Image 1 (cartoon, chains in turn blue, purple):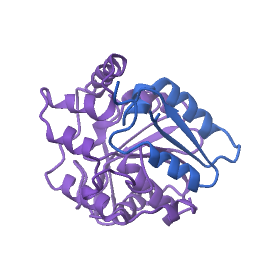
Image 2 (cartoon, each protein chain N blue to C red):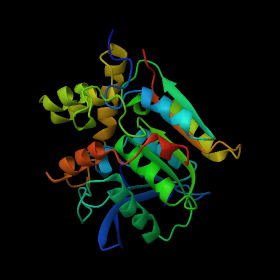
Image 3 (tube, rainbow over the protein chains, first blue to last red):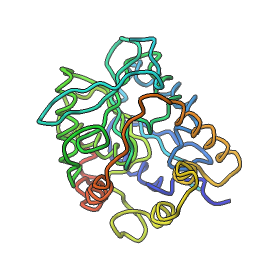
Image 4 (spheres, each protein chain N blue to C red):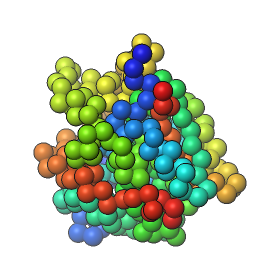
Length: 68
Length: 221
């Protein structure tokens, strides 16, 4: 099955970002394309509300589709 | 305020930097608002209401059209630096001095630039489906992927079926999620945003091709 990754902005870019941004964490969603957060909206909302409500020193989150 | 949803919240206008920005703002007034930067060719209606309203339960959310997009006046700059300056003017124009920021796709590239320009303005940053710039885009032409070129070059009936290919995989499960998304996307039936002009896409593609973000910048975010 093709397509379990972001075809529009390749998923590897999210890895580049997280490797280079201090205080960032990464969320990857399986069997997802560019709209990974729309497909997984309940989990995205849960994770994002938690991230924004927390004062744990994490400054950024990066979300993308999981690579093959 | 808090009784509005993504499908009912009115569109407002704010003038800043010689531009009249169209925006929608709603949600629980608690903590910092979350400002959203939209993807390629998207307007106020292209966000997923499920995401917006889920986040609005715990904070204010603000969606807007950057300069030259749909119901906002002005012109779309051909660089992310220019788009970021306009977005900063919009946030300043609302009188906000500290916000949380989200960017999706090219909106994520703008959000990175805003964070670099104005670190004091941004508390937390959420980047979705984005890049330092579109590294490893494949053919390298205009920094869009071959899949993007193929998907955007096809015709769809109805036109919104484009999003089934852009946002979802070909699996049955993902396509079903895509159809559910399209229903949410169309759920705002009154006072939908105006369509984008034919000047938006070329300028946004030029910004992607200009590659004015790089990995070195990311280390400062």
